[in-house]
Length: 287
Image (cartoon, rainbow, N blue to C red; front, side, top):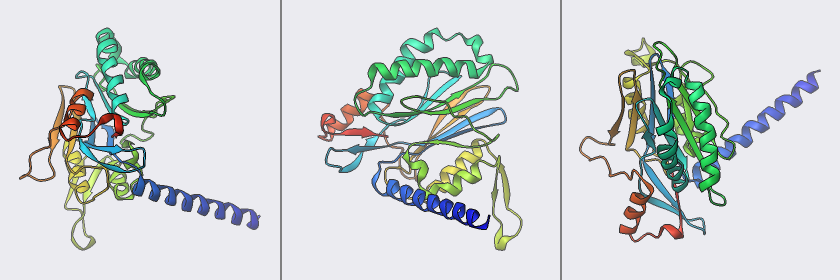
């Protein structure tokens, strides 16, 4: 019996070692983005960086400007993306043109039903506009019409787009390869507790306890500024979805520095890249 336990322990240690090596390789070599979202009592929230990474066929990567990765489709439906920017915008454009005008708002009493229908549409749009080797990740936020009902939050990854919802009441979901960056692990753990404790001096009582909502997302942004991860900008956008409204706030990395101009569509990003003498055909634009 002890031998079997020893073998299982060794296997577990091997898995942890391999996963750590995998995360290290991703952090060192993969273009990154960081999109985080979750829900709390009577709200949903999201924070996303805005950096674009250009990847060339020879493996070289470089910074390629800024893009908006969180898009408010209506006060009740928000979508955020990571990975191939062209593909993400093409799908979002189809959602705006074909899905949203036909959405029966009465269905918003049950966000899960809206999510099911939108997921089917995303699969259809993905198969319609994808190119070989392209992949995309999405995060959905759906506000319920019924009072006191839970806000819907899911993430999904191509090609199957199986929805993943938070398993705990305040759990934060992530998309983008930045989700494996060790720098952000402690931030997400704290942000998934439902409140944030600001440590006191010398291990004493906390100086403050912040409920996870707008204030805590601002805390998360401030803490993220302490880290520098390749492919993740310090400038970020914060989305807050309440019963009264849904808003997107720009947060620069410094009060003295203006928020960078972000492309809100694929044609706008292409125009920005051409202004820098960058050929979109010669590289892949990643988020």
